[in-house]
Image (cartoon, rainbow over all chains, first blue to last red; front, side, top):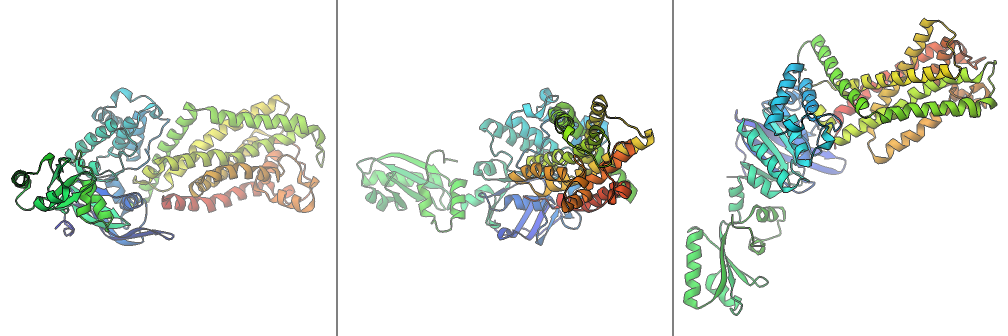
Length: 332
Length: 268
């Protein structure tokens, strides 16, 4: 079941139980649980104020939680913060770079703060500059970098010591689509090299693209957890969406096909059920043919993560109304 | 914590040095801040030395300009609060402080690194001001050893102001706090013996001015440089040197632990 977290084991890179944190009257974390398997990308997905950053800050030992337990790379964040810090890289929301220093100098500085010798720090910096495609800009001030370059350097700085766990707090917020794809490629490379990544994001497509598992957060706690397709499956799997011809009575069509009608779009939406999307689609077409009902378009689509998200974070919204979401681009 | 205490101490020193190098690079690459800081001190020196100076008489006699210069030196150390606070605030806003905090290093390494760079910066500012002073007629009439001790006292004051700047920068990060400090250093600077002798002030003002930490440093420097002190009586007549050592020591003892705590506890 997606909602139950597996028991903590040696494969858990990050494990949190019942984290609570309040700032004055604001409850940032309200019994937050998390289990991130080693070698995977795990996304914390949620709207602003859901507690994503507080969760990451707590796990990265920047913030002390009021209650609850957490281990990162096998070390308790409260009792052994130094060991945790030696095993993690943190890339925060704001680019944590020195704008006045050159790209290379930033990397060398963080390397030396990680107790590398000057020679080792320089070698590691060169290696990272090549890997992240920044070799040409290595000796320029960071203030001259583009948003995407900055973010890549930022991530590289978090990787100086080959951390076991890398925290990425909203790594693509504010980036243009091209830079965002660069960052995604970077994250994939990092994971391929064996690092566990915990990233927070408000973008569903980002979680969909990158994460093996997704934890949906709201108001400081876990709303749902699972793979992207498990979460989508919660909305009933594939749907067949028929756009009726202009002269067809929508109520009649709905009576023939079942499902729900959307008068505004002149559409009827039907759940595919256990037989699968293909079967449901041909069944719908046959039913319309035999009833003599004309249609402009038939579309098979899975619910998008956006729909899942809206569904999960707005409990009052029922499943059927979520099918009125735009049908364009939803054919994943 | 890992390793033996000495091992940890050496690591902290090494980390601090890395941070100091970084902060010094800032001064070298973007020197306008420090240059304007020095220019501002020189401007004040000219305003008080030539514009107001003629109207200011010293108790116990002596020329005003040689009285003023040690005051200007101490004032420059006091104004260092702003430089330090601005740098600390910028860092914590940028998120680079969060990255430092996520590294396995001691919580005093970053502030200590900052201290190293700011002290170096202030030593240069002080040297420029002293040479400038010699041009306008200031003289060192004491011995070389005493003069060096005076410079040491000034940097000791700067060291204390530095921790005040670090603590303020870490604690008050709102938009207005920097402006508040920029305004508040003025009454602290004026309510002292830096520009005028406290003995010419009304009783309670004179009392406050005498006990101002920067007054102790300025009075001790005047004695050591062999400049007129403007003092005929009071605590600073006998104990200026002691107070110039003690005041910054008290401030450092209080502010270092507070700063380390503020650094560790930073949270958005």
